[in-house]
Amino acid sequence: MTVQAPEAINYSNSRRILTLSFPGGSSVELSAELLRVLSPSAEVQGHGPGQEVLQTGKQGVGITDIQPVGHYAVQLSFDDGHSSGLYTWTYLAQMAGNKDALWADYLTKLAQAGESRDPDTNIVKIIG
Image 1 (cartoon, rainbow, N blue to C red):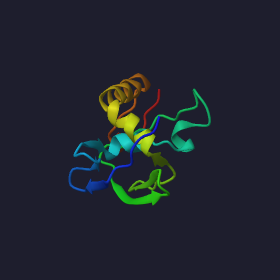
Image 2 (spheres, rainbow, N blue to C red; image 1 turned 90 degrees about the horizontal axis):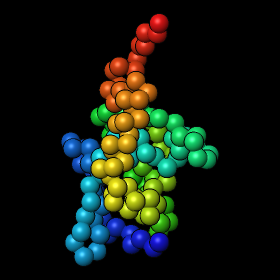
Image 3 (cartoon, rainbow, N blue to C red; image 1 turned 180 degrees about the vertical axis):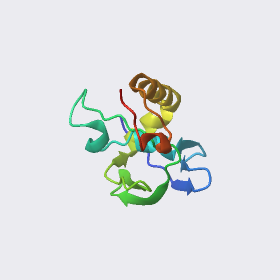
Image 4 (spheres, helix red, strand yellow; image 1 turned 180 degrees about the horizontal axis):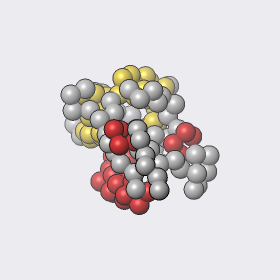
């Protein structure tokens, strides 16, 4: 699948939204939180199926830097220190085309794990 590169990538700090604008006038918005929790990095995705690591407490995460990688991807840096994922145009297109389902799936996994998007709830856990 060949995916056309965006002609512009803009990030809104106040909205925490990354906007990809494509030739022909179409654009798509992806939240920084969705991009962070579904980072294509091995730290998040693992090294194979079933090794994914559920990301918790990422509500309000922001993007601090966007660096081009060749003509095929960008590397995003987040304010929680994560910066190891390479977001290819194909990966971003897949995220954009499925963002509602991906978000719903993420929320379901959080609920099943008894975890939260809220970073403040991940400081202290009472077990027992």
